[in-house]
Image 1: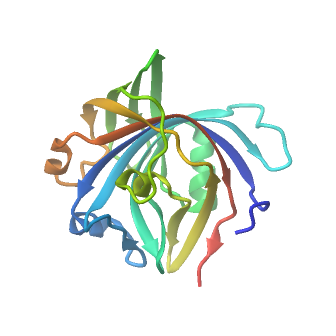
Image 2: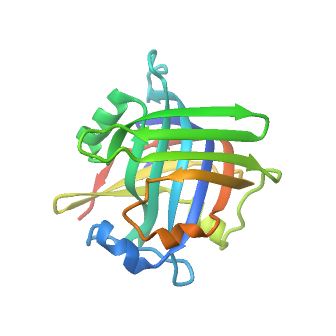
Image 3: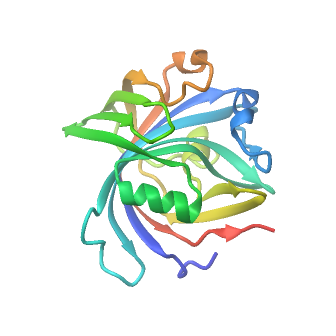
Length: 233
């Protein structure tokens, strides 16, 4: 990946990582066979990640003048392809109809339409979502978040670093595998308490997995650069 070949800039703001440990065998039916499930100390992980995306612009152009902001809520896990680690998205709910359409058609990403709201006051965030995509059940998600620490960087080698410092996403279309490189600085994270009142995003998995409190961290803002998808040999 050449660092000056990025095609899109995005700011990710008020992002919350919620992570739960999960047996790899519970995830396997939902991950393409071409990808290996990545594990930390013999444990796989699944995450729910709500955030706001702003300042979306293509390289060499000013920010998109209309609808240059969206809310997103993704369900993700961690995989490798030929030893290269990255993120695999199971679903990506978003409240931007054009963005959902383009991401599905151009990149094969599993974006779906949803109605969403994010409310903020001091160190507290409340996020709600209701999926409205044709052919999908209307999955609801309601949660509140309260930060309880100062910002810090994850220590290399730690579980938190392994979960968050990922610089590629993997997509499988038919028999082809694609890598989507992403460039950004290291996350500045704050430990956070999550109060999840409704969560139907992961109803395809055993509910016992989500009885545990998630490992939850918040990041105020991160600038990212998106690179063209690369078809793998």
